[in-house]
Length: 446
Ligand code: NAP
Image (cartoon, rainbow, N blue to C red):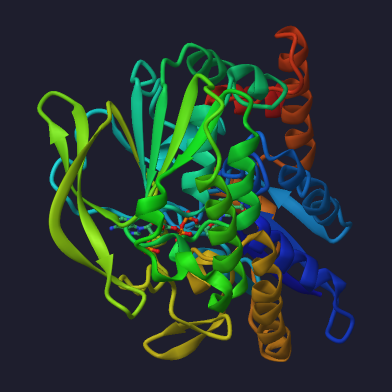
């Protein structure tokens, strides 16, 4: 039997495990899905916004794979740093598929970026998703005005969570401390700002439309700003997603605000040049841009300061190098050929990649399925050579001998039960445990 380790239990890792155990052409495969966290599902648990229950329910599909008789979940197993360096892991399995995502955020590279009150969207998402590594206890929710830089789906998520009435989040699994902080938030204005035009915004139309469904917030757009986009007057020539976004914004430009307590301002053609403030951020300085006719923009030399005591920089994720694996710093990915990891330009026997660390942080969750399938097809076509590789006896015993203490599936089920119990105690539905000691205690003792 071919023994494969998949590193990372987010969508790309689980889709890789699924493709490995569902195939019929090659030898039978047994898959261990390793994760540094004691909990599975990656960004489905720690990235998808808590109020997106339908997307979160994808966990049920992923769960069915992790409960397959030839798939085992081994959480709390960090790969990369000693003791479990890639070389050692490769000694335990015929093949290893790295599906470790893109864990960091892109930098803006402007003065003031690190002022107190300025955070990456990733930090904010980790906080409201109860990620156990979230280092920030409370965001500057005493702020009246927040700026979200970027107009992708993550920007929409964080703007929406900031603008929601806390009661709307009570029914979700958002951690209790975050719910309390959001309930006490004084934010009245959320400015979501794109450096290019509405036809080039990265958010999807479904996510955009959802902003207009919030009970406590109006969405405001400026018709004269939208009209700077040449495609705004007649969007019929745009590709589908851009056209649909523009159509929604055109519709909103004609509507009067309902006078709700919070406002989401959608702004365009403004590029951030500095975060202003001394002790803490108080505004973001933007330069007005204009389309250059090629899809990009040029600065106009006009500036606008948007007041903000909270800034969330939502300009995309970035892959981080995993110690012992090759890494292309410019793309933030592992060099590969159809999923085979390349070392010095040649395929490294037994090492594969899938998901964001393979192709960069783009696409929706479903994009990972064909990506993982391509990698698994490469792996299976190498099966004969992989089976010839000598591997150690029992990987679990070897991991324990290294001092690692994997949380296996029953441990995860105990975490789930503890989260249900926590929810009951708080008069809520299931509530996530937000810290390492809490998760590990629950995994051990229930
Ligand atoms: P993204 O889609 O790449 O959007 C990044 C945004 O940041 C773009 O508006 C980009 O503008 C802007 N940006 C980049 N550098 C900038 C700079 N220096 N100054 C100002 N703006 C800058 O990234 P994301 O929102 O983090 O999403 C990552 C992936 O996850 C996407 O594929 C997304 O669809 C997916 N996702 C999906 C969902 C969902 O389906 N509900 C939810 C969350 C995330 P330019 O276009 O001008 O570069």
